[in-house]
Picture: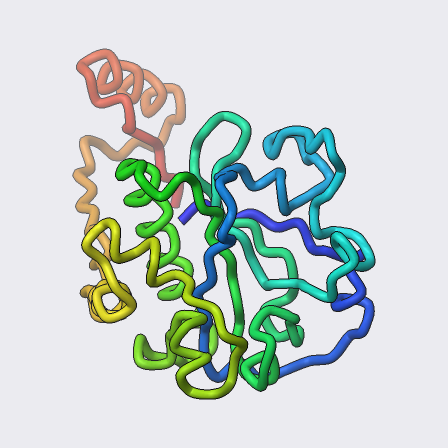
Length: 229
């Protein structure tokens, strides 16, 4: 996960200052053909790129609307995919259009023309990793993750179809998404690599130790070192 932070301190939602205890995660997609983060996240921090229209969401009411999410996933100016956190995770967002604002972290994925498989695979992977991170942070499971359309079905969000319309074009669904997050949550933790040190000499005169260290490094053991008792 390529996680960065630019908190929307100018957004009315942030200034309202309400907090929640996150009980779930809601996945959104933007519904507009613009995969670049700079459309929504600003001002430019040097890697986002400049938004010439200055219509990003870090302002009082973006385009006159009361909207704000906890994060966006999309492209940086160099084309690589990243996640930008835009609200503290425990801040009450304005993303669901319903009661899910009181319980769910919400993030938007920047849509493109919906046909670029490489871009979709990159944002899908980034989104699963973000959800796994948040699940670990707030003791959630993959079962606590829903799409906006599922929030509508549960009567806790407004009537939107995202991200089903996009996921289905690439053979994915919220069920496969949750399964992929579960794989990340249940993956075995890498074990710490054990190191074994071999001593090649013990000296009472430091110059002799230095000379041996030089010989050992010259032989190719560049990580050799002197330990003093």
